[in-house]
Image (tube, rainbow, N blue to C red):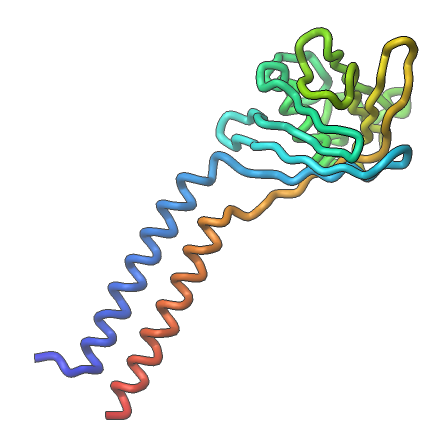
Length: 206
């Protein structure tokens, strides 16, 4: 027959196994789809915020939205998945955005021939009338660019009617957001281990 101390240790081993399996299952399910928070740091206009989802398995972006004091808007998923023939490894609009928002310096230096001084800048513009944008802001055009050597990508939001009116401009960056379920499971596991450790300590003093 096992002693109370042995019972506590067995329970601890079972708890550790359960936590490990649960954490592995949760992280495996969430590893592909990652959530990113977007910061619009404006030099002309108010700052804004946004978010998008990035699928690490398929290298695709979905759900890219933004909010400003002047209004909100988003990119259609169909536009983000559109194939482009840009320099480097990005083969879709969303993949290009992801590279420029998260690590533009590494992306820029890894592209073919773009380390030369003659290729210091490029931009990708997508006009709302072509079916890329939704929402009231901006009404017509969202521009993303990157200048060689800069620490962040840039954005511009334009109203094309009746002329090119600059609504907002600045730099744009994105950072990954930890998944709430993963954090909750980790805290639960740590709490369970703490409880079992105290139980073992009490059992050892008997």
